[in-house]
Image (cartoon, rainbow, N blue to C red; front, side, top):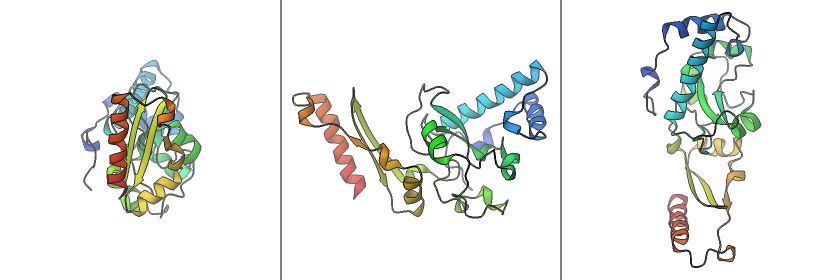
Length: 218
C-alpha cells in the first residue's frame, strides 16, 4: 500500500531507548498509560509520544485527521494522540504504539464521536485486514487520502465564518461525514446585514469561497 501522506510512516524510527521502554509498556496491562520505573525510561517514553504526535500533525498539516479542524498551536486541551483502533479494547492493545494505528485528532472527533467503539471496522477479527484501507468504513487517517473523499472550505474574518464540508461520491465520504456529525461544523455567518457592505477584502474572500463551494459541490 502506498502511503498517501508525507513524511511516510516507513521513514520514522524510534530510538533504542524508546524501543526498550515501549516494549516494557506493551508487556503491561495498559501500554499507553504505562508508568516507567526510572527517570531515563520516563524521558524516553515521553520523547516517543511527542515524536508520534509531531509526526501525525505534520502528515495532516496540523489539522484533525478526521474533520480537518485547524490544530496549529492548539495544545493538549484541543489535540489528542488518537488511537484509531481504541487502546482501551484488549484486542487492540498490542497496536498502542503502531504508527498506522495512531494519528492526531481534535477533542471533538475523538472524545465526542470516535470514543472507544469500533463499529467503523468491517472485520474486527482479521488481524491482517486491520492494516488495510478496505476494512474501514470511514476515511482512515493513514491508509486513505482525505482529499479523495472530502473537501473542507473555510473563510474566517474576525467572528464571521463560512465553513462548508463537501462529500465526494464515495461510501467512505458519506460515512465519515455522518459518523463525525460534520454537518454541525458547517456555518455561514457572512451577509450584508452583518456589516460586510463596503469591506472589499472581506467581500472578495467570501465571494471566492462561495465560488469554490459551487465548484466542488457540483
